[in-house]
Image (cartoon, rainbow, N blue to C red; front, side, top):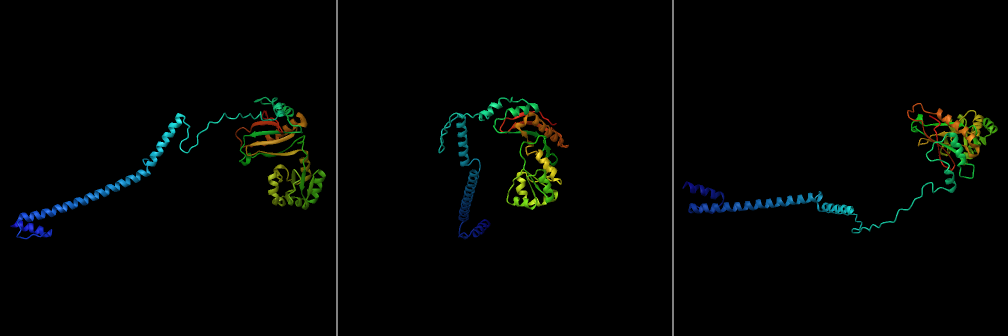
Length: 343
């Protein structure tokens, strides 16, 4: 009876329609039926959960695969790359897809050497200069006079490559030198100074000299001179013309001797052949030392004056080689290597 009472309690909890009139076997059968139904329902729920989880994992894997190296796009690109490399190794240049066929061009055009592209006169005189030979200064100047290929009176130029660093203030070489025989060019000198000094400058050979009248020509943009000399007191007045004079190298500067209290002396020196030289960004100095008509002797005197001045400008802070290479040339003429004249 105790067992039946327990079964009835359990059946009541499960809300089964059984009473004391039912046998123990019937009550157990009813309870077992409910348990089976619950187990089946639980199994279905678990199966659904497993199916949903499997589906979610599959989707995540697919999303990662699409973004990773194993995606369909990446695999296709890898295959195309491998195919391209294989064609490259095999030397296959046939067009693929929309690509145009690679048409083999003819032989490369023959390019003439730089010497062959020169004029006949240049090539003729260039034969006198031995390639790779370094000449003495006297021999180089004599050869330069002989190798001028032009009909006009060409300038003779000196090109010196230095071992300085132009970015360093103490190695930015800039100076003037008075060439004993001049440059062979007619120098037009202008002087901006008070009336009294202007009169002295005109007497010394200045082409233009004045005060207010001179500034009027600058206002018009007229620069009919090659050298401009000014007194220290008048330099501030030239400030507003710096953009006009500066780019043309005409702005007076104390280092070049164009800012001077004694304007008459400055004019005489400028007319006599006083020239300015300075190192460029490539650490090279270019200077005309005269004309071919001067002859080797006068050119040698001018060159000696320049090299003496250049040697005096050697920076004390320089540790390496001062002069790396030197060359002489004429206008449109061949270059001639020269022994370094400064250490």
